[in-house]
Image (tube, rainbow, N blue to C red):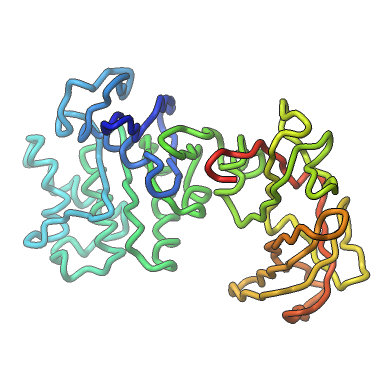
Length: 356
């Protein structure tokens, strides 16, 4: 998709999705994920390539002719209608038999757990209930494909997490092929059978959620998913060299020694212990100092500053999740500590121009 002036919003993005699968397209703002969804829906025309739904090219079909249900962030419900009337609207537009419409509307209101609320107007419903009406309206005509364009972004965290599970339940119950667009990492990992990670208009990785998280294809994916710390230096035979010190890690295939590199390690993969103690089951141990503590409810996040290099001159901040039940008392800011990790958990990738 070319926006002119040499700017590609979507660049050679090609993928297939099997019937009944739930795919989430994940990426930062401006990565091209919404543009890709709009091309699938028919709201924007690709400058090259084609969109195929159910084995049928749909490039020449306008959006309303494609068998696609859509739920947007702005739900676009009709405020002057009741919930049931909103759900019935696409059936009337598609000239369904009027005698079948009330029963079908009731079936889908019950599917989204709004049975008995069909006579309420949109303004009388909560935000979560309005989301359910939008889902029922998108599904009631049984489309071949359901598109979700960040429909949960405006909800508070608790309601958003509840609706994520609802999306998963409904999709599994109906088996409708679904493509979801979001920047919410948790949402992508919770609801999806497959994840596409996009950046700068290109697909960086297309894989199952566990594989995407545990085996990122490149440094961008590794850094985008989860809470991570970064080490900048040069690739070594078995790690990354920083100011003359080699830190052991898992080096990406084909990355030559001496090449500018970035190491990435996630916060939950780092262990922390009092200074002088070696964290258990670690190949690498580094001394440092706690410079900040962030309370996240179910866990603590420590910011630990360490000195790397032959003289410790390279100062690096590590983000460390505290998850050792045998050590219930948190460290205080300024406390000397030791952190460590398994060598295989530090992933070493080539440096990315413009990022590193």
